[in-house]
Length: 91
Image (tube, rainbow, N blue to C red; front, side, top):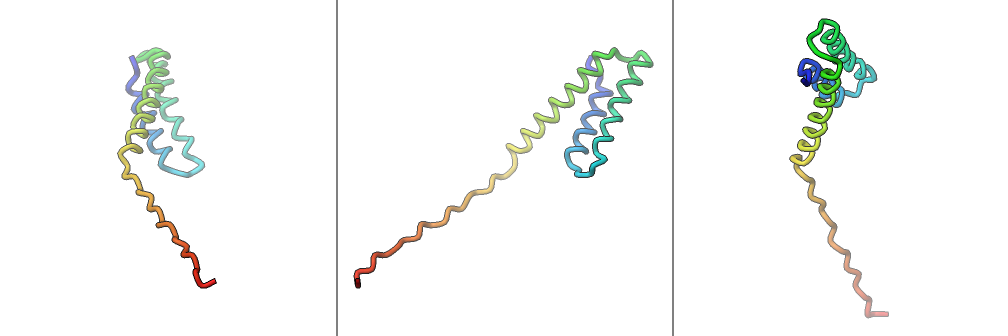
């Protein structure tokens, strides 16, 4: 508990799906789902083990993404210098 077989399969699917733009990327989630079905069918894990494994992978993926965004170099915003408008005294 949890099923790390399912968790690693889900983590790989999440990683690949988050970095591709193909409309077929959702088919990647069939692999962890089928992995869970096979593990339950063969008696290696309970259903709850596979569900917790999937949840575990989702939490790890989100935390890793948050950490990755926090470590990315921040672009410094360059503020333009204010334009000074001179008063014309020749009027």
